Image (tube, rainbow, N blue to C red):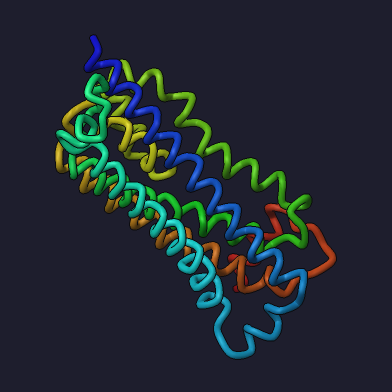
Amino acid sequence: TSDRGQSFMLAYVFMMIIYMTVLMYGIYVMRGVLEEKSSHVVEVVISTVKPFELMLGKILGIGAVGLTQFVIWAAMMAAVSAPGVVAAAGFGGMELPTIPAQLLFFFVVYFVLGFLLYGTLYAGIGAAFDTEQEAQNFQGVITMFLVVPLVLMMYILNQPDAPLSVALSLFPFFTPMLMFLRMTLTQVPAIQLAASVVIMGATIVAAAWLVGKIYRVGILMHGSKPKLKDMWRWIREA
């Protein structure tokens, strides 16, 4: 049906926006950390602020730019999809789906949560390596967590309320895209929405704690390409 086709298209567009923006701003965080590290600016800055505060400031600063962009997009979507706007603009034969306010709200919420999680991980990678080329392997692993929901998209489009779809949408690394995808297709219970936000919040706190330890040591390390066991040692010893 046309309604189902519109829902699929809306779901795909929203999901791709979240994917691209979380990835883009996450990489911005990594590159910002790498730039500060390679220019040795960070060695001066950490004499006045703690490494964790520096990391948090970098993530929140870039995140604020992304949030502003998302709020503008959400406002534009709300305005364009409002009843009568298309006809008033002279496109009376065109039909645009009305986007519920709840959907736009969670559009912003899941971007923020997704960015905080992935931005934190990308900050850790930036602190651990000297160049983006050296960081590619670890960067690829994190990016893969953003790619997997795209692979799962067709399954969830066809069965948004299936137990597996619910479980996948509650997995914090997939939640920003898959939970929002389900929201565009079906009425997601409030308990699942609340659970997804709580789980993501807890995961972000845990990631910030772990990455903060890597950041504290790695930001001052130069000349060596750390391995996973080295990062684990930094976590234990920091």
